[in-house]
Image: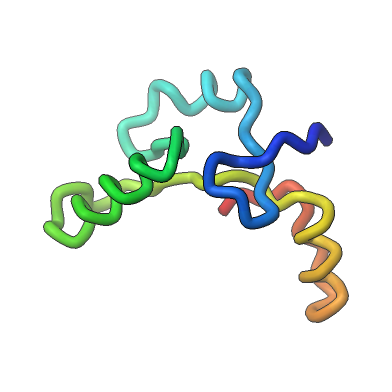
Length: 81
């Protein structure tokens, strides 16, 4: 798995162009572009303007997955957040 960090960081891996393309037609799913996108999404959610939508921040990377596994015995490598 390629380890290019998501725009929000925190041990998350950025989506590939193919993955972004796969979600581009969805009205309910957005993929984070940058931290301003996160702020805008949260502000809209607080106003009730994007009900039923979700913002994908990235996929759990190897290092974060390892830490989660050590504490929970659950392998979440590559899962969406």
